[in-house]
Image (cartoon, rainbow, N blue to C red; front, side, top):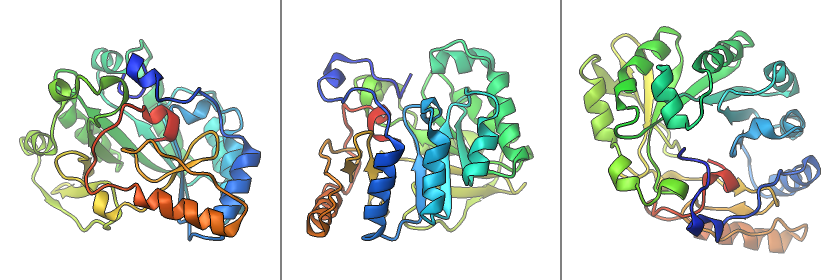
Length: 289
């Protein structure tokens, strides 16, 4: 419910839903690699597993020499896809898991999807040797009671989970204040069952990580109360192949074959980065999470 577009205001600034072609992706990745040291490719959406050529995007990234290739998914995709992605060179899967109880899961997703199927996909990804991380966006009155069960479940399986503050973006922008659950509130709830300490985290990381006495590991991505914009070194590419420097900024820039023009686009994209996250009417469905 927090990623899909649905407001009239958003429809005025969004682009039509479409998929990045492998040909355009390969072209742009090759051009960008000549100017940047790309350490990670993260294929997001929307729901990237709806892209029929997703394994080919992974294969292109692998051939370009990218060491860390990740996909973020809701877990509801065809049988055999995880094997295909692994064979293409995928190294990590991030799953959105906002609840461990079916009613809460259905309410926050807005769909009556079977939770067991998602949990089985997580186990399947682990069985293929992929690094697995889970994301839980916490919404007040929706799933704050799931914070503790999720850490118990993930910790027992040696999976890292990241709790996200709701971003002031897209369809829930106007309801942000009534649904917002802060990083401090998340830590307070976790402290009722766990003792934990912060662990060293790279400056460019979006999450601040913690470890419990049981060696359970979790992160908190707090765009609003504990912004991490200072260390942000990410670029995003939309389905048209245009690049963005910041989720808080609608401006995008072309990936030109002309080296001087490409450098200008990269400089302009980096200049759009903010000191703090300011929010946006645009849904992450269009430019990636």
